[in-house]
Amino acid sequence: MLNFDNDIEQCLQVLRAGGLILYPTDTVWGIGCDATNADAVEKVYQLKKRPDEKAMIILLSDEREVLQYVAAPDLQVFDYLEQQSKPTTVIYEGAIGLADNLVAADGSIAIRICKEEFCRHLIKRFRKPIVSTSANISGQPPAKLFADISEEIKSGVDYIVQYRQADTTVSAPSAIVKWENGDVVVIRP
Image (tube, rainbow, N blue to C red; front, side, top):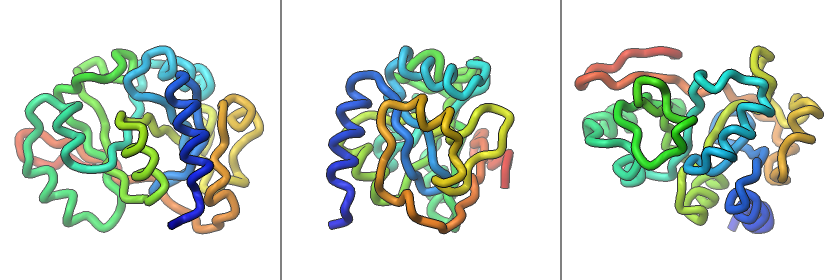
């Protein structure tokens, strides 16, 4: 078993209380919260100094969960995702069951099914989607390593995950695609 049990327990307490976590994802370090809690989502926007019309993504642990938060997704998207070699975020039409201030004006939501072990365990234990947005102030470059995260961000969250803080593997942000009537529109390769 990977050594992140304490981090998982601490994160669960913070997420359930509507707080913010700083955590490693399958891409860059992220700021996270309960994606169904509008007050928690607002805290993320405030910390990042980001306009709330600029949507954030959510992480899920498997395909079945997409069906809970998207009205009538095209199941072909899962075949597409299986063929991708890098983490890929998909913008789906018809978001349901999420905080209103997280859903884009057109009703869409960006979702990534996370394969990283820590995130998968956390999401499965939390039983809800978790917001994931890069750990930086809006307009500044995303922190590629934990050491690059600003003190302003670190002091603005309620819990900082210990797991992978010393990891010096540089990760890139995910690819972003929009799924429109069975066609893939690449937004960020």
